Amino acid sequence: MDNEKIVFVGQYPESQQKSSLLESSGIPCRTNAALHSGLMNAVSLNSIGPAEVLVPVEYYDQAVQILSIDLQSINTQGDWICSKCKEEVEGHFDLCWNCQNPR
Image 1 (cartoon, rainbow, N blue to C red):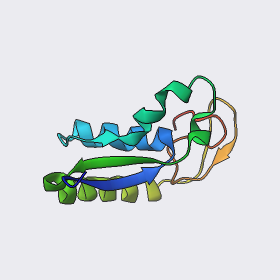
Image 2: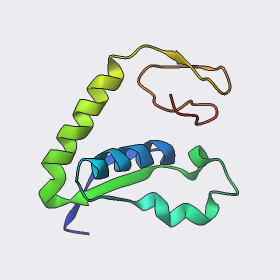
Image 3: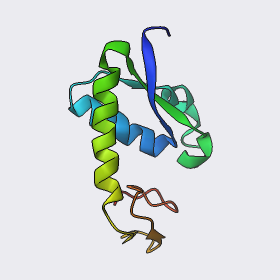
Image 4: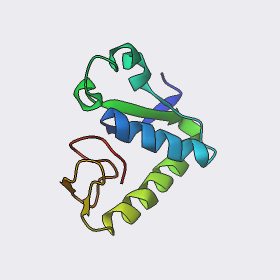
């Protein structure tokens, strides 16, 4: 749509996290991953493909700022071990690459 802009593109779990962060900050947004919701029981969430987070144009700058601050805080954190599957995960990820368990 002309009245929306993409602020994030990533795998479904990450897109959902970014969408939740923006909504908790008072920014209306939506993810196009909802179009794939019927597939979620049949396939891995990461195999669905990229999902976009969209915001109304008037919220774009504020959304970019919030996501930039979030990215800066993630990049300052070190690698971590997933509590569920025990895999090592790079610090800039909030979800385990192997099992999608949150940090």
